[in-house]
Length: 212
Image 1 (spheres, rainbow, N blue to C red):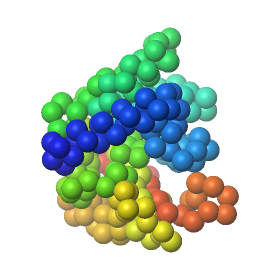
Image 2: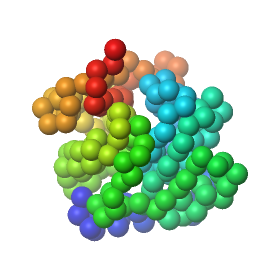
Image 3: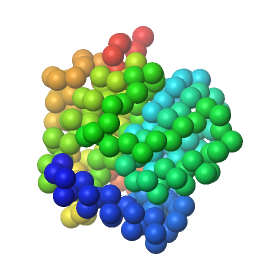
Image 4: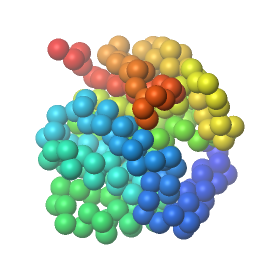
């Protein structure tokens, strides 16, 4: 991602926050229900007492869902939009196990003290070089996590493509990760975010050890 593209994306989310405030629309989710489907899939793949980094945490909505559904572990939310981080800090000020930090994937070092790094929605916007951005982010995250990186993305197996969004072939990405990051990969591409919908996205888990 070029500097111009990076700044344009940040400005885009800052504008959404100005328009919508603390709402799922500010982080480009079509609905709260759709957002929760994604969070449910993440939570099903980690122990409830694990420690996680939420990379691209937005307003901390993943943490809110996790706490509501029994997650007791430590949480560190990273985002490059300061307005998101300030809002999340205020919202979770009483959560002793939660931290939020302004974070730039290209400039800052990622903590290596967390079991899982979770990445939801970060790869959806069309950029000047999406694949490079995805692989650089996954590489840095995989080196930093203790156990696994779990992320979602929009699939190229779709009925319709929004020209502002990025869709990737999950099989090609699976192969790229298998060849360059880890042999231990799980690909989930069987879920929908609304009843009767089409499975237009997928979730992938990259682990450092086999899931026995």
